[in-house]
Amino acid sequence: MIKCSHVANLLPHAPPMILLDDIIAHEENFVHTRVRIREGLPFFKNGGVPSYIALEYMAQTIGVWKGFLSQEHNQKPQIGFLIGSRQLILNTPFFKEGAILDVYGEPKYNDGEMASFECWVESQGQRFAQATLNVFQPKGEKSI
Image (cartoon, rainbow, N blue to C red; front, side):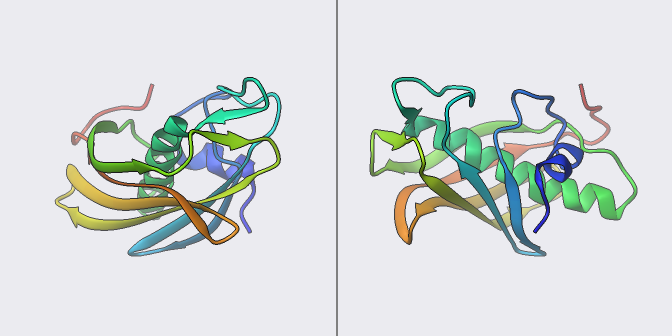
């Protein structure tokens, strides 16, 4: 398992906005990350995190996938943009403290700049969120 410090090496984000804890798996057409809901996380309030934050968990999971590609080409992670989502489904209003969220992404289209990913969030085998995310990473864009 790759720990959080490696997550930081794969995203152009800086703490505290690195929301993922672990990278569980990465393959050419699949990525799996994990988040533990706990006090002290950004967006944690009243015993948990609102489920709409799953959109950012999924977006950062895509960023991890892209970060591995950048690393393979000896490049630093570059900023990417979430253009939008389709068919966002949230099956809970809130992720409670103590929940362990498994976040998955599968690229469905990628031309090098524009990409589309099927993403979902599960906890203990139950799906709590899913969406198709469309992202854009312009060539030559620098990380900030």
